[in-house]
Image 1 (tube, rainbow, N blue to C red):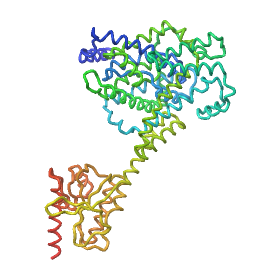
Image 2 (image 1 turned 135 degrees about the vertical axis):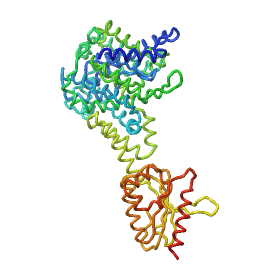
Image 3 (image 1 turned 45 degrees about the vertical axis):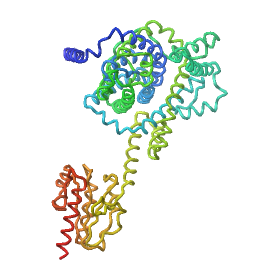
Image 4 (image 1 turned 90 degrees about the vertical axis):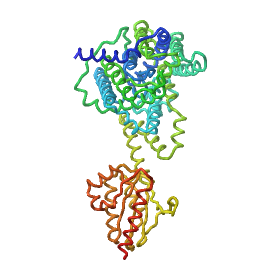
Length: 567
């Protein structure tokens, strides 16, 4: 097994050594970018771990292990694979029912499974599946996550302990009991938020988070506010590197469902990040390899008690804006985070919890993309409905299932909209010119040819709508219907049922149905289901490279049939 991994690593490096070898020109810039990221994201990683309700140091372990591994194995040169609020909240929701050591064991198994699912997605090249997660779903999901982040911090931010467990009720209860806020705690929280936004408007904006936390940490020490809760009061911050921990494999079954949902969330986020930052040569990263790289990062980081990691837009922006030249910027950032833990662990423990809550509230506010929400709202009612329902479900059901519910809403509403957008029109041939499009008649004419063209989907409910729009043959004699099928490479069983019933009615009136512009795949479907034999092979005309050729042939044959049978 070890030899297999060794050979894989050797082959991987040999094939990509030019890309992975540090350069004299680029490495100094990468060191600066990596250090900048480490300083800026240490507090954010700790705060993100709190969203999962685990030891804040687990967020730092994620930066130490997952970020360098993600940089090595992803196709994207610049994408930063690190902690994200969406993944942390989803992970916290998945292990919310567990306490103590069981919670940590569940986290290890959860992150390991996330890595496995993501690696499989990469190896099987499943990038195309992302199209089923619409932008409306993701905007609604991220908005819901942002609201959960903000509401989840009201206790630490105000010092008020609400009796409610539900975050919505807890937030409302806290607002109603503003007179019971712990003033020193509330002041530290407000100061942190104000300082982050204040420093963010200056040249110090890149280190706004760390500066705000430094000032917030000094406030309780200067004023003697001993009632303000500190990080060390809720968790030990070891002055050591993480040690590997074996997973409890008995938890795999229970964690599989949430892990799959979290893996999908991470992949969707990662794809959005990597495709926003082209590689130095101008090429766009390979999505499937990015899947695999994120999977490797999560799989190995899991054994070191990391929280789920994924493509981080904010982390990538920091790395790029700090002057990163190659993937080494993300690789060395993990080393700098390790040095910070080894040298400054006692200082980290002095950070006030209301300061961490204030930082997360800022993260939540910044995660609400008003422009994206407005764009979705203005697109159409279906997109707006999907976004609203996804946000609502994110707030009221376990988070790991909310994205699936959003996708289900999206698909159902798409099917409903598609079925309502089916339109049947009549094509009337014009001598020496192009056919004229008219509204389809309600009734077929006797001894006449009616050419019909369909706009819209003919699957599921769309086929039923199509059936209602077809002109009836009742009362007609020997009508001929030519149905244009060009551009349809597949048909469903519902449509076949509609076609058979309509052909029966037309035949009962002494007429016939002709299909034109039929794709080879559709012809095979008609043959397999017996519809080709039922209609007659001569009445199913294949598509040709010339537009309208099959239709003109059908018209000529229909006229000949009417003339022969009419004599």
